[in-house]
Image (cartoon, rainbow, N blue to C red; front, side):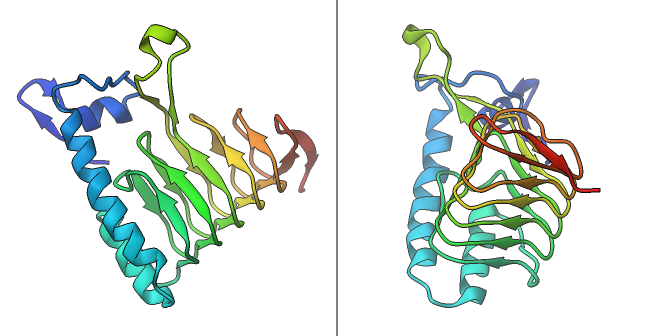
Length: 193
């Protein structure tokens, strides 16, 4: 992703992607709010559409980059931010998925995402005095990964190429290539090859 900077200082978006804590009193926090407000309006329009091409076009506007025509997204689709989502070719995203993407979500080609999947890149500090701060880490879904229905992928996780996450799993650690994981927390079930 292209870095956006002013002078020698990183802006708030750079700090989010770098995993630095961002607090509500940050002088640039209003920039996040502007993107969130725009995204909410576009998401409402997208989710009321019954046309897959229109859904793809509106989501392209939300993420601020074109989505390949081979990719299919079934509404409703939820995101709180949208600008840090990257979607490859021949991706399928089923109904009622939620992407919290302030840390960056990177979806390679031919990934399958089942219904009600949550990709959560955002977290908060354990310290109660600082709990409202955001700390974000990216999620990467490598080529041909399959994320089963109702699964949750947590901040900082990479799901390997051809890997399968069984339905209803909570994934808190990286998943190697060519394996099946499942459970809460997700554990190795078997190798595919």
